[in-house]
Length: 81
Image (cartoon, rainbow, N blue to C red; front, side):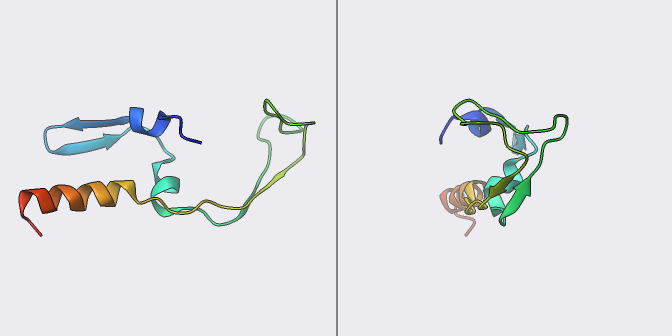
């Protein structure tokens, strides 16, 4: 699902790039399969779920190295590589 949330947290100031979210690393490097447990409640529930669940077996995510691609593209445009 593409919501633009990650993109909206990226800010460029001068020659520095700031990513204002903690989960950019999960996009950049991907994740292994893992279990998601509730933090504050007894079960997990989200809109569209058939019923609350005690845990979710997440299959992991494929890496999407958007920051490295942008960096290397910028370097190529400047003739640094």
